[in-house]
Length: 371
Image (cartoon, rainbow, N blue to C red; front, side, top):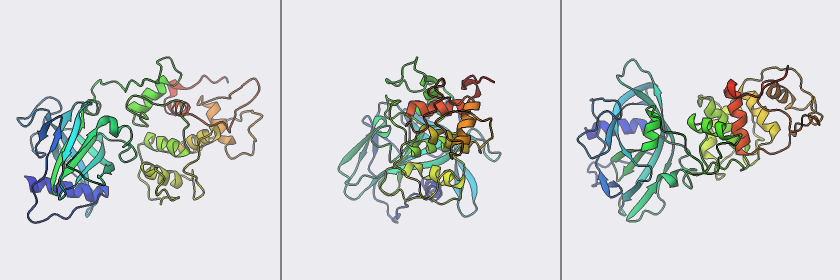
């Protein structure tokens, strides 16, 4: 049973580009993973399937069979599916890894998207690796919380549904927080209630839409920071996710090493393939109104629109056609319509950007356009 799981994990690691440890013939005894003091046993692979949360197994409390997970078989470039189980833990749980100098620990994050596959029964999920955490200086134990993952550790695992925790040389445990599990199986768990998003704010519905559709999430577990400046890297990442993260063969156009934007690698390759950015792109640049409508317009494949009239938008400007389209389609309008101003150089906030995106992707949310 354990060897079978190891083969699956190895395939996942090859698919997702993870570092693969050397497995010794005689594996050392793995140290445990505990949640709030309860030790979690090895993950159990089973052919039995029940939709979450209909069945609780006779394993430790909170262990569920989540269904089928898809991974790429590199040698054949075909997807394979295996059943898997995971521990559902409270959102405020503390996960502890007990370590020794002879063991290591890693936490890998995966997003899961439901998919249909005729060769597999029950609900199926495609797993996409999003990042990992490896302690630099392992001590006797380390702890991990959802608050940390959604806060200071977000640069290592930008987004996740499922956490795959490895301890020692061969032990793996799957963990999912309750809110993630509820969202995955279509529960009615609401979007996070951010303390800095007033329900009457113009960006309240766009923020809820963005979080629900995994376009972006909060800056922390309890805040969205709608007034914080949005960067060009961030809006490109939002657009990439809104487009369902399409595959691309383009190379990374700029060096991002040490710039804390590793989460955006796929988005930047995609943007380069669509001609949105090139080797001159500045990963530290803020996103202006001109940048925002230009990126969104290009993501929608540069549709034509009637000319708009703004005294601060030169007809020959690279973003002029994008402004025309954005205004004609109710994505945004001028900052001062009476004065004929669009304010292309004004820097956008996170609240403004998700509002533009919400209008772009949800027709019912668009501004009324006078014909």
